[in-house]
Length: 327
Image (cartoon, rainbow, N blue to C red; front, side):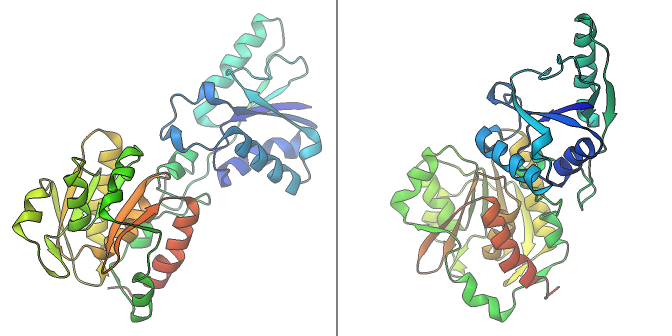
């Protein structure tokens, strides 16, 4: 008769929808709690979590699309229990990760001389890479809301088709000059820099990007000793031929990226070949809210603020287009 469930419902995804559907399909009344800022302190990439009002509106829009809005009440969650003390609650919906919270709600109900509610576990959905679909993985840049893996776009070595060359000459985001790098530094974002000159411009202002990708070349010629002295020490190496995105180079980048996100160390990747096109996996695989800068010949530095929209645009333009040309 009355089911309750709760969650952050950040970047409402396929797993959320399965969870909500399970409760709404068999319940006369449903109360959904949305996590407030007070409970977000332990979230990974918390700064990328959507505002409460955005999450509430997205949830309401989904419920409306399923004709369930009239039987659902949405409340802000300031603690684990939420609506758990209402007398008529007879079911608590949970996923494996929140099972202990459901047991805690029942424990508190018994203390108040209320009957225990049935706990119904809804399985989490698998993403296409075998892991679970979660908001955390969406925020960290691993998957999209449907569970598609950005890493899997590069499971083969890709060769740049001729028709995409003009596209890549155009800035994918904004353009900045060397005097504007300090603004990027001051934003306190996760920063990935692709290109020796881009990295050197950061090092000039005493800032090392979280991930630096270099090849000791600019305009396909060796860099000067002056620029070389500015560059950070190399941590890992990878091979990537001109006009390609090598699958093994992407693996090296992915590994460095995840290690950098998990700790405080910054990584520099030296490419044997050419690093230019590695800006593509950098944009697609980096966390939401991060910044990718890359060199654009005769223009300056291209700056991309990583959002879902930019990932979708990049996936279509670069990922899908380049998948026609497996190396």
